[in-house]
Structures are given as C-alpha cells and as structure tokens.
Length: 399
Image (cartoon, rainbow, N blue to C red):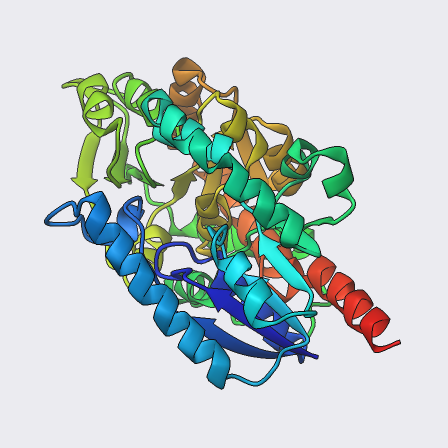
C-alpha cells in the first residue's frame, strides 16, 4: 500500500499529520508526502508572532502560489493507493480529487467550521459560516473521515458517521524523547511493551518521589492559544488564588484572551513567567522540565468534545496532566489524569494547592501519565484504527 499525505498542512503549526505519517510508516506502510505548507495566523506558541498581518489579497496570492506548487509536486509523484488530506484541507481535497481520479481520499477533519467559530470567538462566526458549503463538499468527497474523539464523530450527520474513524491525536516522537531526557532512569523501550502501565508507573513514581526536596516549588506549565476553547481566563483566575503556595507557573501562547488572562492573574499570584512563543524544537524540553501540564478548561461545545494536543504532549513529556472533567478526556486518561469541572477556577486553584502540598501524588500522576503515553499515545498506537480501515479500502479496491 502506498499512501500519500497531501495538502497545504504545516506540521510545525499542527503536528497531527506528522504523527499520522510516522505511525503509518511504523506499521510498514509506504508514505509519500506531497506538501506545501501554507501556514496559519493561529499558529500558536511554536511559531513567532507575525510582524505584519497580511491582508486578504496577499493571503489569496500566497494560497494560489502554494496550490500551484502543490499541483506540480503531485504530478511528479508516484500514483498512490490512498490520499490522506491533512488538517484544514477543505480546499485541498478538491484538488486531490481532480489530480487522482478514482483514488480513495481521506480527510483529516479535526475541526468543523462551527468549531473554528467557537475557538476564535463570536466575532468570527458570520464570516466562517460562509465556508460551510466548502466544508460539506470536502466531507462528501472523502471516502474516510478522520476525527479525534467519539464526540466529534457524533457531530457528523448520520450518513457521514459510517465513513468516520476515531484516531486520537497522540504525540510526536520528540515529546517522548524530551521526557526520557528529563528522566534518564526510564530507558527507551525496545520492542513491544510487555509490562503493564501500572507496573511501569509504580517504578517511575518511586524514582520521581525521591526527586522532590522539601521547599521545592511545584512547576506548572500551560501552552496554547488564549482562546475560548482553552479557557485561559479560568487559569488566570485560579492563579490569582495561589498566593503563598510554593508554585511557579509558565504561561506560553497568545490570542484573543491573553490580556484578560493576565489581568485576572493580578498581583496575588505565584511566580508567573509569560512567553508569547517558544521554538518548536525547544518546546518539548521546556514542558518536560515541569511537574504539571495544564489542559483545557473552556465550557464551549468544542472544549467539551476534544482532547487537546497538550494533554498528549504533556503526558509524553512526563508531566502530570491537570485538565477539565470532560467525557473524552476522562475516557482517555482515566486514573492517569487529574480532573476539575470545566470553567471552575476555584476547583483548579484547589487542585494546584493540593498538588503543591503532596509531592507523592504529583509523582504518582506523572508516572501514570507517562506510562499511559508510552503505550497508547505513540504514533503507531494511535493510527491502528486508521491502518485497519485503509487495508479494508485497498483490499476492496484490489478485488
């Protein structure tokens, strides 16, 4: 089977497609890439803020140039058995349909137009709804639709759900590498894992607990866009209630609610470091240097349906994961996560205070998270449902 990863996706901005590619290759599947990154204005903490904001005409010119280069690359590439169109590929899939007639198309549909509106705020909703027809056409063109949670699959119209497969986001190898570099006593596994997550968690918890010293601060990190989905103001309000506790916090990102979050933190917070962005190569190592990685705390529809990148990445890097108590996150993490009600800054502050006072519990959560991640969040594990469906599609076409 030859699979082509196609489109204007950018793995430095949205790592999802890179994880899919790595996972498929680890299953012995040939993957060729046909990619011209477009880049996005919502690039988040791994891409420097733009010095200028190009207008709509410039964006359209840039997009046209990317498409022209993408078409030229596709015409030189070997014919694939399946084409996977990367995230935000609503237009890309129509180009792939014309370039590869008869080839099954897979759309990585992590975010609907309604989800984008929820993420960017109500001001963007009217404009984004104009894209709805494009989105529906993209879904119709796909033989297979990739979503990241069962909740996102249920949002699809009933006829579309049968064509959808749930593939968790997972974490790229560099996050696991950062976790192992931060804790040399946990060697990289060789071959298939034969011990259980609980056994590995118990061994690692003992090591981590011995690392804590009396008076040492709890190191907390939050990474992501300051958007309604993330619930960053909930974090800001929680931090304002932690005065006097041994906690240091790193806040990384930018977005609509950044200033509001800073205002909510106010003067009565622990030591907080604010960073707008961190280079992609440095972010995993920085996260791995912390004890707790915060997830999402928004209360909107999208926030209740997703498991964000940072939950997978934080666990892979060896952090305890503290996030909102939503169905997909609790189902994914189970006992390896710590949960508070979505939107509840008081509960988040209480959870951080408890962790700061109980190092053994932090060690247990860190160990459980990394053990789970190394079994279920690695690329080859998250793509297993996709591999099964791809083989069905290709075998059916061969017959």
